[in-house]
Image (cartoon, rainbow, N blue to C red):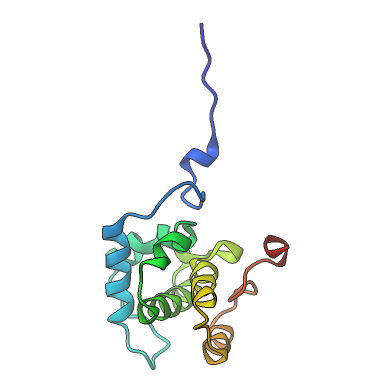
Length: 137
């Protein structure tokens, strides 16, 4: 008789092994680009809030972000930053998608001080935009 082992990482959406569904990324980008750029209040339907909630902590953004334009990355950063403050299901802490998307922008040399200031001004998450210091050591 054989006994299987349970690996919780296998079922963890924030696991670095899992990749993002392209259709869901496209939906997130569409929702992000549809938001008013000057506002701080998101206009998402309850169905969109529910559908996008797993993306907030998904580790697959490092890879998925490589395929996106810088404008799309900035729109997603704004969406996830504001969403974490507005929707209880979007709480992410150090695992926030914003951290991963900011890393992609930094790799491209396109992370601006203005965007950093905007993120800090629009979040209560102490880990944004750079993540947990221990993860960077």
